Image (cartoon, rainbow, N blue to C red; front, side):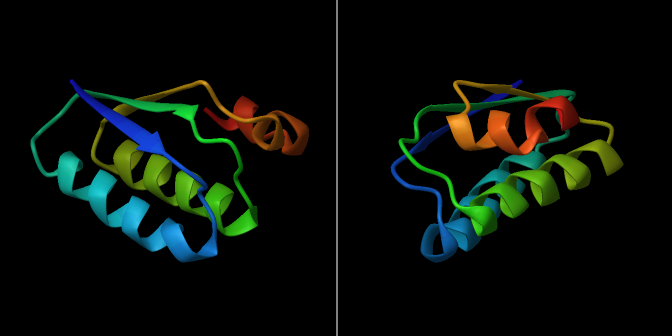
Length: 83
C-alpha cells in the first residue's frame, strides 16, 4: 500500500507533477493506493482530470484507489462516485 499525500492547490500548473509522482508510486507492484487530499484546498478541472487519469491507470494495473479528504469540487461534479 502507498499513501499519496497531496498538498496545495491541484490545478493546471500542478496536475502534471501530481500525475508523475503518483504514477511513480504505481511502479511498485501495489494492490492499494490511498490518495490523501485533506491538504488540498482547491482543485480545478485539470486537477480533477488528473485524479481520474491516475485512477484509471491504477485500475488497469489492478491497483485499488481510495480517495480521502476530497474537496467540495469533487463532490459537486459527481466525480466522488467514480472512486
